[in-house]
Image (cartoon, rainbow, N blue to C red; front, side, top):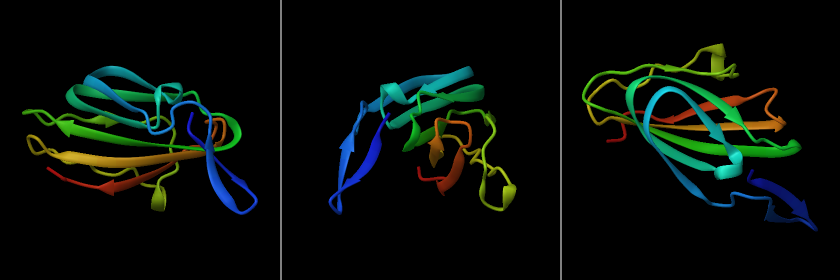
Amino acid sequence: AYVQTETAGKLSTTGGGKDAVSNLGSLTGTVSIDLANGNSFYGTLTANTTFTFTGATNAKECEFFLSVTQDSTPRSITWPTIKWPAATAPTISTASGAVDHFVFRTRDGGTTWFGYFIGKGMA
């Protein structure tokens, strides 16, 4: 997982996955996002999709970016347990080719995930 640490007032990066980008391809069924494979993921929803998150390091700040694109039919996403702003999961874009962007963070090895919907309909 990508981990930021502070040493003598300067940020440095340690751990696997630094700036690695993973193409998840067609997103359908249950899709596992493993931070051992990077910290930036993208794919196209080709059916309703359920995400799971793995590979976060306990006691380290871990985060990743996720970009999802709708295909020609509106698809839905089922998320793992996420703490969203205002305790409400976002409504994703449904237009063909719409691209939505998310950031997820944890510092307890993935027990608690915080989710941020940072861009809707970016196509």
